[in-house]
Length: 563
Ligand code: SRM
Ligand code: SF4
Image (tube, rainbow, N blue to C red; front, side, top):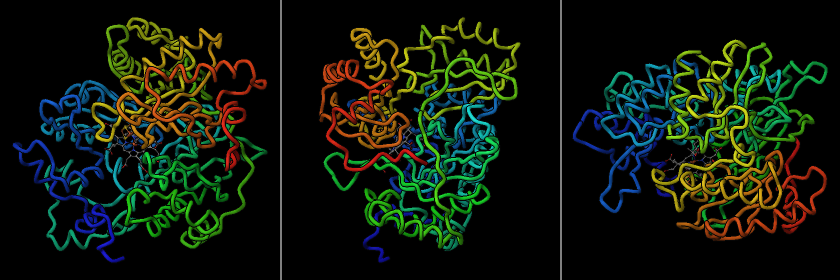
């Protein structure tokens, strides 16, 4: 492709395929409080975003970094969690942020703290490579223990896929582990070629998720590539293989109709032994066919939308060297996490814990961060993160349960009825003050909005109904608002587009209902719809299904429920 049509990100990758840039040199210069504009792009591949505190913009720019870990399937050993907690106190803003893709972010890290934080993460055997950038991102897998006999097998496949799709550059190790720049001559840097990604990596980010029907707890349809587990009908503990989903993705831009959220298509079935080969083939097909001239059109979903699933399946088969079989009949019927105490198949217990907007912190009423640190230090449970920004303590023997309950109660953290149902499976993106793309508040105003929802439910006699509410500060869709029953998407300060009609199992994209609703008017917009739902719904019909059937105009494309 002629270079004059390529985006500047493409030219940058080609100019240094090791992705090292001058990061090592800047790290060695204590007087520098920030990275250069080019390095700002390279550090993303290392799991680092350069940001500035937007609350302080009026008084001058303060550069801070966000660091994102790569935690496949959201599973963290106790020792690692304790290191994360310590590093948050020492080098970040004393909080840990669970993301909507099952990992942790550290916010507010100044440049002098970056080296020690990265070193600490590496010493804790955690990497941040490829947590961001034009590569395969954190691979999602169901993390709730024992919701299916296939859970461990699927987690293991997720790790295999994640490992196989890691970029091979040595720059990450040199800079963050050995503590210096990548020592290669310019011509050697230029000649570096990743075995899978080549010299210019992917046109954009690439996201993979695993799920085990009937539970769609990883929002599989929102991913570029999904593996939906198929059990042997004669033996539910035997994994036959996966239905392969391609072309999901949510980001869009206001006022640009060429950009849109899209639910993935089901392309076919593969035996489990082919999962890595299939993941590589899909990613390479994206590498070869994604748009490198327009970043707004560069996601895999647009390849599928433009060329169709049949065309893309043939491209994948050609690269994989085998055919996909017809998809097996499976159905997703639900989404969401489990809360409170549940028994695991091995007889031990796990505790599902609600974490408001994924932010692990201490407040005067609820010292969640301290409670978790104390419990993990004393009882050494495994820590697991969910894609709804919640947390699980797993592998707990019966005899420790009471002591853990007491420890949580001492710190004001409830176990049995943690919060109202409407809060449990809802989420908000980070947004202000760290996200440079935010148009409106999200994480900071979401608790207040959920208070209003609780009051409205009480007023309408809706009790403890489960409705998935998600909010983002801009249309990029980081908390997946376009899959929610109620999605709020930031448009301008204090104003949100209202999207309605997500499916019970998060299998379709919802639709826009009102534009630019003021924050204070959101509840008033929803009151008559919720009242109608109470009166007119079919038995067991969820709010999203009701709105899709009875309120919105007929949909132009069907729900993609089977996978
Ligand atoms: Fe995201 C960019 C936060 C999940 C779509 N996302 C960003 C950045 C890095 C802003 C930036 O580029 O400067 C945000 C950093 C905010 C901060 O200060 O921490 C950010 N995204 C997040 C997280 C932390 C939201 C959260 O509250 O949990 C999630 C981290 C995931 C992870 O651990 O890897 C996060 N982002 C998502 C998801 C949901 C998902 O993947 O399941 C999406 C929609 C799905 C998709 O990719 O289509 C998403 N983020 C985007 C986009 C739009 C991409 C597009 O195709 O248009 C951007 C903007 C971009 O890439 O240019 C973006
Ligand atoms: Fe930032 Fe927008 Fe993502 Fe929210 S949705 S974290 S505002 S990019």
